[in-house]
Length: 253
Image (cartoon, rainbow, N blue to C red; front, side, top):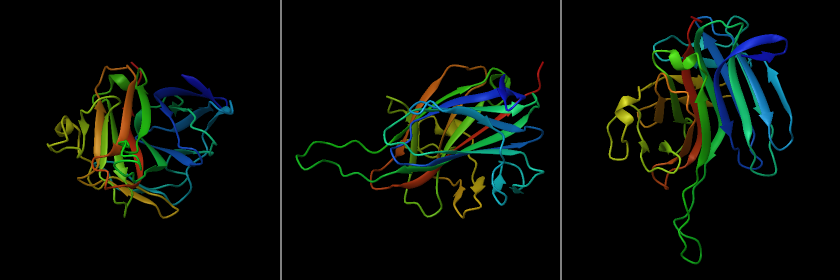
């Protein structure tokens, strides 16, 4: 539990982001079935920290799996945070909480992310790794008791030429297409496909899941941290994407 602007919030999940220099990220959280989101943050470079319950802009259209589209409004709980750019690689800590301990389902969306195209080698013939982003994530104690755990998806923006791929950092074992068994998609068949779900932001950006988007699961009962690498399955694909995290804060027992 943490304090957010004089209200208490039950921790749903904690994550660490490492934005590329000069990149602006946005974090938006949406709640249904009673969940009312709060976002605590800390920027390692500047030392700035705080917590916000400021809502996402009106006009975001959000589709949870198995639900109907919802448009952000005063009646649809949400919270939003813009992470300012830094001159250097830096760590950003985000904690998602549910205000007043209320249970319910949540979606956390991180946008502004991009996988850039890289050549196979440099001018001297030295191999160049594919571009990737890092994501550190841990479930809160209550969320870990939910039936489904946490599902994390890497969803390409509409129009992007990106074939997303997620793996545990330092491992080649990962997921290419969520819900499908594929050559590079070991463990993918256990990740629920969320085709059609996602977000259409009020600024015109759309992130709608399809059969080529990647995903990972943190199973119920697991409160250990997970460190993911987000990249492209094939270095010929690249583009903008969002991380979308789905979970549930169950009632307190």
